[in-house]
Length: 395
Image (cartoon, rainbow, N blue to C red; front, side, top):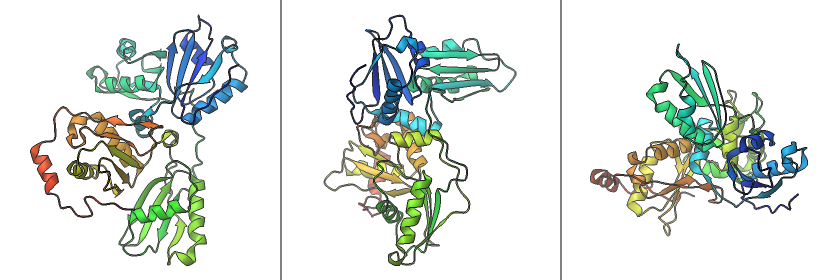
């Protein structure tokens, strides 16, 4: 049994001394559950397993070392792999589209599942298993990347018109425990002073929380005319901390009161919570900006994806800006749409975009456009008034 050398941001492990005759698919079926991102066979009888985050890699390692093993794995050694960031495209697909290693195809008409399905998808990447009958098929890929490619191909192929193509449940994934349907995650804050901003309210909320090193607010809606705000949290425990924080500070909050919202939101899905644990947030980072004009254009386009709460930047570093949205799905939508159709967003050309998380966790996506920003678009952006609503540094 090997000595483990854990790295803080390592999200991969390497299994060594596997039997030469053991196929990767056979090994995977014998593994403990884990939030697998990719399984890669290597030479010298080894296997690399990449996870969505470092915590999942650690949990898998502990299970592998402590639980009884299948006979083919009894002499296997395990060690941590090299630290590597998770591509932001994968993280976005997991949180926004419930992406997994599994693709399900079902017939919505009288047609049977095409016999060519296996040939159509195997070019996307290695397949762990394939099951099909006349009306449905389930494909387990060895990676989420391959499943994403297959999903895009099948959804856009005329041969699969009239078929449903969607991500399925990965039985090998240790998804978070579902939150009870009656979980209290919604607060309403009333009596907010005139002139207060959403950003100020969020900073007040965050000041009463411990450093959890992850996004805690799913969405916030500020009704300024009625001086109230509605906040939806990811976790009931965090909502309770904020509720107690405001109640305990009534004497210093100037008439502000907090209560539980009667009409509750649906609890965050398991995939959304996994994405947040891996580094997704309401804030995206845009770096490698060329100049202030491009910064202005980027901010103008970002507002098309949803309400922007703040976009602080340093006057000494105009090459990077962080854009905070009111809802985490606005951030997902921005990253997904820009990444899927880069040529439609020439104002982002040459930039690197990601969730505003440590780069050790998430790998940014470089925006490459075939056509540069048109003169008319640039001129319109430059003619925009340089007021605080266009570019500002909001603390």
